[in-house]
Length: 118
Image (cartoon, rainbow, N blue to C red; front, side, top):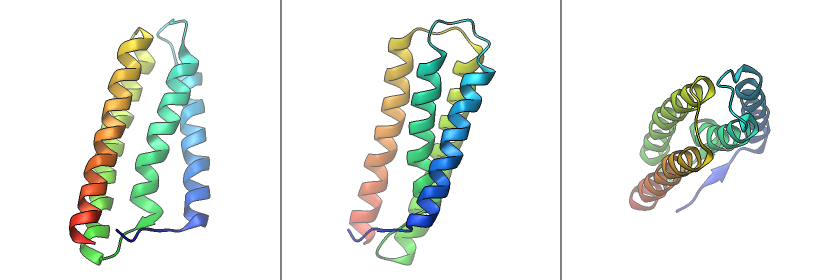
């Protein structure tokens, strides 16, 4: 698989994800003892999916388009999940498991697309 990364877009995506993580931290009204986990986990998960949607291109045009569509879908799902965890009291274990599984499934499917079409 031949992935190319646009470093300028990647830097911009990092800034957007960092601000989104801070927004999750600032908006956390769930009165949990771990809003920082929501900010860090959300920031990382949003960074991974948004970088796939904006800053990464694969070997072929079809693979790039499929990865970008997949990235946008997972970005929306993870953003919704993070917003839910921002306003609903949660424990750390389910949060880490759900966020990690979503992010890893995204990476696995994106890799499979790039490998099969690239």
